[in-house]
Length: 328
Image (cartoon, rainbow, N blue to C red; front, top):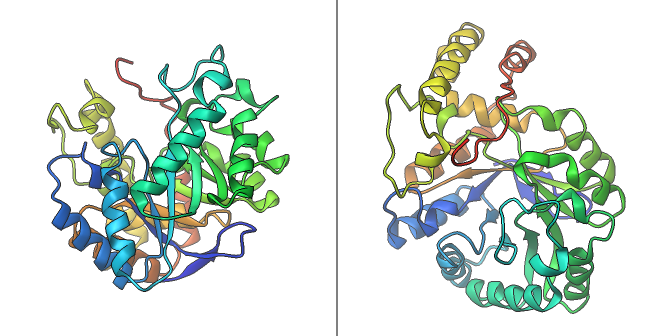
């Protein structure tokens, strides 16, 4: 496992992090025993960065990670997320910050996150979404600064709103954020234009999510694939989306295969290596549910960077499809 600087924090984090959404459910049946085994194996293989959220099983994912923290001697860096109070997701430009992220709400929620994880101080607290409308007066971030001064959180971040990831650039330049979590993958390459360079200039840690496009970039799905109704992917790939996505992945695979050795053509590996290729990226949080996935994803860090001809070919496969929300 290789490690990278996490922005200006002075912390070194594993290139491949542990994305813990599935541990809380929502991606098919998941036993706590499988979750703990996956976490243990990932740590054995050098992972020291774990990302979770209140939303993941209403704290279930956090609680499982808390169990891990009690029995592992290594210093692990855990990032979690606080969602906004009830209202539209993502927040509307007409939402008031004091309604969605009031100081009393944030204090109560952060204390709950500490309780779920079993820690006195959270390594990184991220607001789970945001709206550009709050940039002029980002009061929720002022509250997090208070909690930081009180020793309840070490670092402050935002998980970018899917439809407006660049909304956090101004906040980074004004010094509000220690880290951002962004969607960046072969299909979604827009962050390379300004968001990632700005993070690098500002010394802000970058956590890449959805590097595998919710599994599609592994190449494991086929036309006509259907997910269970309670599986998040049934909405993400609603209607004809899965068929259109599979067609795109097949074309991409055909393009890059001739440029790679036969034993390095795994689309999952290619997708993760693509995300790691940008110098602003600190860690890529691949979703991990079991020991096999822990081993497969962490192995990517030991591979050589993608050759330049492959990166250039992958740039041609950016897909300007907008944001896929339920019902669109």
